[in-house]
Image (cartoon, rainbow, N blue to C red; front, side):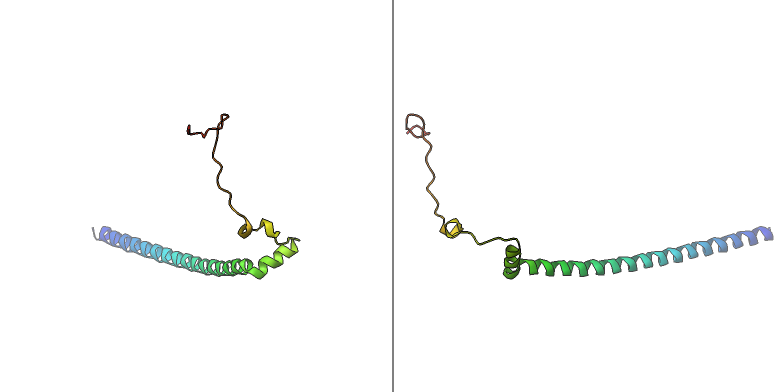
Amino acid sequence: MKGYLIAVVFFAVFFLAIVTIRQQTEALRVGYRIGELQDRLEKLRDANDRLRLNVERLRSPNSVMQNAQRLNMRPPRAEARPDSLRRAAPALATGADGRLADGR
């Protein structure tokens, strides 16, 4: 009986040691993964900042003008500019008899 009790205690201690080692190993693995993800997040944030700066640079009037000139683009003629266009009144739909579509 005493040998059986020693075996059970030994098995319990061995089992607890294995569980503890497994938990520590998992904690280390998760810690490394968190570190990797934090590094990746920092790199992505840096790339995002660079892209935002690039967008702002490209949106600047000087950049737009330079790109337009590089593409041999010219400003629109005065008559084609939106501020010089006049809106015509909408035409009323008439039928073949000259009456309005609503019967008037």
